[in-house]
Amino acid sequence: MARTPSCDKKSGMRKGTWTAEEDRKLIAYVTRYGCWNWRQLPKFAGLSRCGKSCRLRWLNYLRPNIKRGNFTQEEEELIIRMHKNLGNRWSTIAAELPGRTDNEVKNYWHTSLKKRVEHNQITNIEETKSKDIESTQDRDISFLQVTPPASSQTLDITGPFSPLSSSSEFSSTDYSDHSTTYVDDFGFLDGFIDYVGEKSWDEHSNTPTEIVQNNTNRDFESFLDAYKESTIDSFWTQPYEADMSHVSSQLLAPLPMEPEYFSIVYDDDIWN
DNA sequence: AACTGCCTCAACCGCGGGCTT
DNA sequence: TAAGCCCGCGGTTGAGGCAGT
Image (cartoon, rainbow, N blue to C red; front, side, top):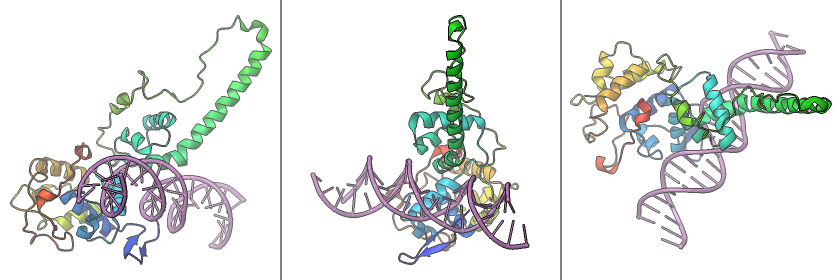
């Protein structure tokens, strides 16, 4: 499934499957500093990857609130409906599916939904043909029959702008189920917490150090919730402190610029 | 057990658009 | 206006999984 790790000899950049160690580094850096510049990020995060690769890995796999696992029927219907109206605009479609990435939606379309839709279309054409034949045969009495609704499709292919099925209606679908699996295979997060743990955080501000230590459950969601709560008003708006002595040099390289010259992108949606 | 072929999906690639200089 | 940089998007690839023979 994953590609064999390889290395671009020209640039010295690693390619292929990401290792747990690389994931840890990327998570640690992005949660701490945000993605202020994907191109520069790998250099400071200690990663031998191109910025594009880091961005992709973060957005499609490591970012909080990624919803993994099977697509629900509602999600499937929404994808089909939106694809019918928008075509291959995967990022737009994915935007209507909380926790889903464009890559995931695209893959799911190509591997599953596309075939199903094509099969449905063929079935519908055949059904229409057979109905035409029947109606031709019964033409002499057709004027006496009540015409049933034309739609015999299983799936409701209503436009997204239809008042009956606006995208906002789907947005209001209850995705707050906390049993949702966000990121499976996150066993390494414990390692991540240990890794960035006690001495990695600023002890003078209300930072994740205390949260991690107090968080006995150590699950990703509660970590992020606590993290958000404690950092939303302080950390992300707080000027970067030059004292990096408590931070593992392996984990974070000193930032090359003054804090006012880089802006941390804080996407509130990530936490909701 | 060994082989084959299809399926899945993480990751790569190239392009276009927006922004800055 | 042109050039360069960066980001985001959509198309494509290919290794590993898995079912069938």
